Amino acid sequence: MTDFDPNTVPIRAAATVMLISDAPELKVLMMRRHANTVFAGGMWVFPGGAVDPEDAQTPTAGVIETAYPGPIIDNTLNAHRAYYVAAIRECFEEAGILITRPVSKTTSPNDLTPDRQQAARDQVNAGELSFQDFLGSAELLADTDQIKPVARWITPLGSPKRFDARFFLATCPPDQISSHDAGELVDSAWMQPKDILDRFEAGELSIMTPTLRMIQNLTPFQNSAAVVSALGSLTEYDQVKVDPESRALLMPGELGYDAAADNIETGWVRLKPQ
Image (cartoon, rainbow, N blue to C red):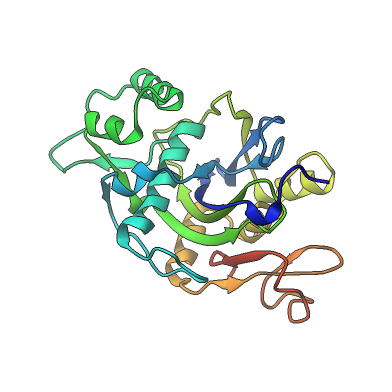
């Protein structure tokens, strides 16, 4: 039984980022949500969250892709920009990773030492400073060239919170050190994709199925350069289907895909092994 009407739960725009790095093998940043959070409590996730109204107006530098599968309510450039900015902002808020570039080639970040970056992060998380104002004061722009769209997932009916989430992938800047915010997120770690899957199968990690599917699609790659290179030639999104018995998310070409259900999980994935 639920204490809400699933049919009245709104679908909110959201963005999340698969942060990858080589140490020296390919690893992805995973973060564990506080057990008491309404959505995905206690689960290991990628940094991300809901799109804020201000995200559409935050200045950016770089390409913004607008071609996505499925229905798009607002197809304006600013609407698409909002997802990119939300992804970059959430990386900063939740993981402490700043994906930006200077306003111009003749400027440099305005005295942005690690301590000042952390202080600004604390202020943004506390609602005392907007992400847009922080970037302006530091003479930085959200760098959309550093993140690449790799999937779109819409939370199925029945959840207390539903999201139309765009997944992005980014290589962690070498000068940035990740840390969880100790609020909504209580733990974080850089993990190899195969180890994540093994620990999930062993019952050590709780992971939502879309997140798990994205990790599965990372396992064939040896390093971040190979992932980025593959994305450069992948422009089409494949629709995910669900095995009615195992509830596994299947991609085209996998056993059982043709007979699987397409009305259980709504997802389209661009990142996949070649």
